[in-house]
Image (cartoon, rainbow, N blue to C red):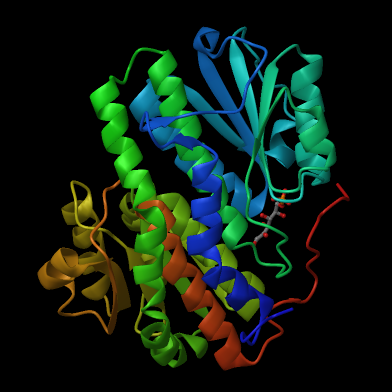
Length: 364
Ligand code: F6R
């Protein structure tokens, strides 16, 4: 049932404040203001490295997880797409935690990669939405997302719930590795608890995003830029746009622009820049300005401070609430999803059932 919404995708985008809160609730002890994972029968503090495997949108959760786990737990993290991981000859060292991320829990390549890790004797964990799925049954530690059934083929609420669980995993690893004291953890928990409200604020820009969709709907190519945890979000924005609107889109790390993609820039190529204000902002803005100098039409997604500083020459801006850098990728996922959605609606494509795509990819 789509409720009042025109598509399942839009309904699921709007469910995010509730389902992300639901997911966070099962990973946060409110009284202690601590993060908590489900019980496990292995010693998390013995983990010395993490390998994260997934496909598509879920693999971008893995990339963001890499930034978080490295930053907080100071553990080395490797991320790969399952279809590459399983066919190369990966080096699996002792004391590795192998993490799979999957909405369906049935994606054939991710399941095969999980079995490969298990056979190699690696302890495994899964961030999974379907609790009865093969992956949910086979991982040593199941970390469920509580997104509820996701009907739209393009993943939205599963993505933000997966990020919430990934953040909890990063914080928990940091604690058991002695990299986070009580005060620091409490502070992070406060930021996580703010996520649902911040997503609500982000949703308030729905109409404004719908109004700018026409400027992108006619484009043949669109580029997305981001730095740090906003780089995987740029990849996610491009994937979402191409799968539901059929517009060719690519996401790049901001600093990579000048190493090739800037050759594509002219006034027909909209550039979506995802850049919350903060330590990485100025660098991304200078990449953006290089593109603007070559005629790029920029849509800047930032907070009030960022837009005040760099929004002047953008053809459109999307204002996000000012949030802590840790939670920014969860909140900024919302405008990225809405932009893809409204461009697809403007183009009249089948948003919930895009051509050639299946919700669960059980073939290799
Ligand atoms: C994109 C999308 C896909 C899935 C991918 C993995 O919107 O939904 O890229 O993320 O097929 O699927 P799961 O998470 O079920 O393993």
